[in-house]
Figure 1 (cartoon, rainbow, N blue to C red):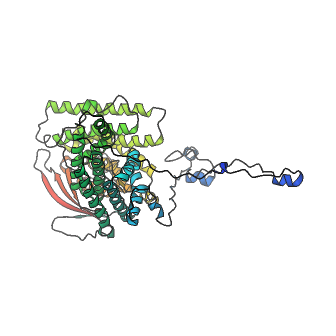
Figure 2: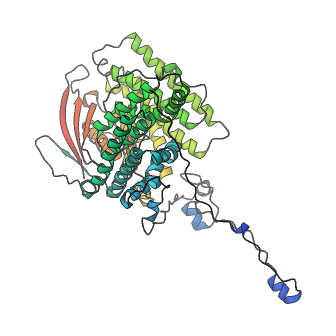
Length: 560
């Protein structure tokens, strides 16, 4: 049965104050002489705002900076050292009143709920929007919350948990400690994990109960899907993958069933909204779930030849397209995971591998054509860097998924350097770890951007200098993207590097770890926490070569 159309209310806009040009003109006397001259309006010079975004060196020299990054041409062309750019912290608010300024709701809520909803409005929604989804997070979600209490309470829970995480993020460097089986260590979860989450969980449970009641009262497909996305975000923040995957599977089942709806006009309209606004989220969550070992059990709704359109009209279409290719690639990679070790690689498998790689090349060419357009903004170019990282990493993974030797990754060292360079460029835009903390930048994103791709490079690229650059960017990122925590990724990659480089003597790239010293796989189980500190690692190696027996052991990595 198709879902009834949800009433969407327009957001209220604050009326702007009249500008100075609309104020009534001052009256002047018509007399002559000195009085008249004194009252005559003085001619003023045109005032322009000062440019404050130049480099430090040009500011000291009091000359106009051309603002080329990372070093400006005005400095380097004259042989001077450019001292770079300073990101100034935003002014701190004296109180939390701004958090309470949210779009008017159709029901009264208490001050604590209002604060969390305000945090969601001012901080969570913009950070979840990233480059692509502002329409969904800053408009559609709020509009649905006007008429759907389950959505509203899920937003409150998400805002409360997000604020707890931001409060608990520390400036101190992470110091990993490896704990072997039989040993123990005391890990204090900290006040941010012990206190403040009960309110969020109460709101979360209320949202789930209200959604269940809403579903019992009648079909509410769009409400259920939007609520599922919010529930997944809540579990991402809590660091609990199991319920996150359960919510995802439930939502994906609803979404796929809705695409089989009847041909009535209302059903078609609902189906179109789900395809445009909801299904792309579930496709991205599927990718995250697959990377954490949760295989998909349904047919993917897009075939490989249809994954790339003839042209991209915006960056969102390019993002959705590369997600399709990545999902199809990961399904193939998981299928080949153990077959490559038993030498069960058939001609059909090689043909599928080549088809995936061809489609990635087509995607890259289509993106290049779009970026040559006249309406491309700097934000589009920044978003393209992220998408390019995803495409290059997916291609590297597909290339080596039919080969059991870890040394097969060495053929992709130039691609690894490309990924790290793009990630460094993205990091230079957002600033250092300390600068982002000073700017109160968010440490949580719904989607993957650079954390999991950099983890792949840091663990699969054995070039000592490139992998250290990847780890350095991870250490500076201070972010959780979905279930991928940057501090966790950096610490695990560093531990793997330590194990693999035990027998190395040269670290300039002329020597790489032996096949026998390389780690094939690391299974990760992290504690359930807003800021996880303890991570269980199950490490797989083959110290006698690819045809030898597996050596598997467990370690616990503690970040403190």
